Length: 66
Image (cartoon, rainbow, N blue to C red; front, side):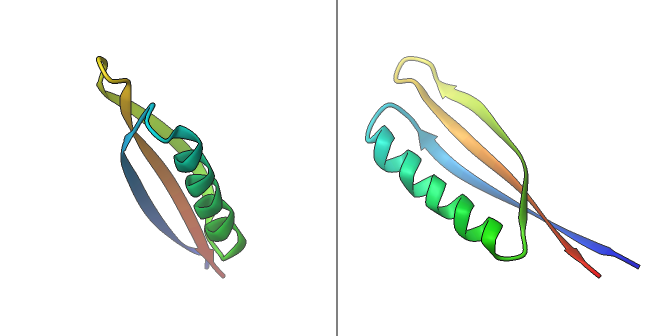
């Protein structure tokens, strides 16, 4: 029977400041976790500050055990 584990990571205030640094950092995290056992299932964003263009980034992960 296959058992599934889920994980959620939240990155707060992903915005217009240091965007390229944030994007490369998040990209590195996604590559590292995907190369382990977890697979990225979906992503989502939520705008939290429209004046300064900040949003939260949600990453949903899944790990299956045989």
